[in-house]
Length: 113
Length: 115
Image (tube, chains in turn brown, yellow):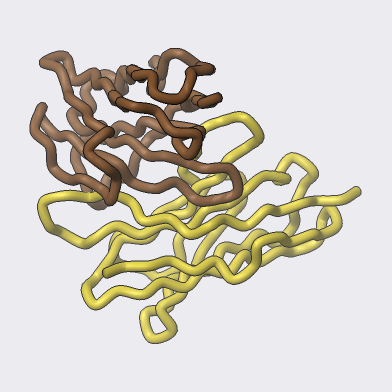
């Protein structure tokens, strides 16, 4: 079975630009979450979606937005990129939320120059 | 609010020696507990999780962890490590029950296994 797939794997953008990151969950998983991992830190929660509804939002500015599609895939959008947005962006999927545990993708490495 | 503290940022150990990676958490409500491993340039892989029941949890690759409610700890142990265990390990919690289940991670512990 395919795991959680994320695209692209690497991306270089210029300050002020917009970026869209994509995630396909494991088949049957209805929950998708996004995390930002800055070098040397643990992942920080950005968004969680379950059954296409936003279930949680972390402490990130409104420049960050996301959505989940009917096939449960998801997009993370970041507007007006800043140098500080450079990070590994991880997508995780789960059957539900809470105690199910999450399966993570390999991430998208975003570099803002 | 919940928080996770991983007490050691780096742990060097020789091959075949035992290792313990320490994790303490703070929460006013019950939580689920997780350990994840991250190999270089990869995502996170679930090692084990504690939901309820027996406080000793066994995971993949020979790892185990013990939940101690009174000390709010969830330390990860392995009796004999291999070179291939070199990676970064993250402890995480999520709220028990509730309408969302986002993970709150510690800052990670880099395990370096030397021959």
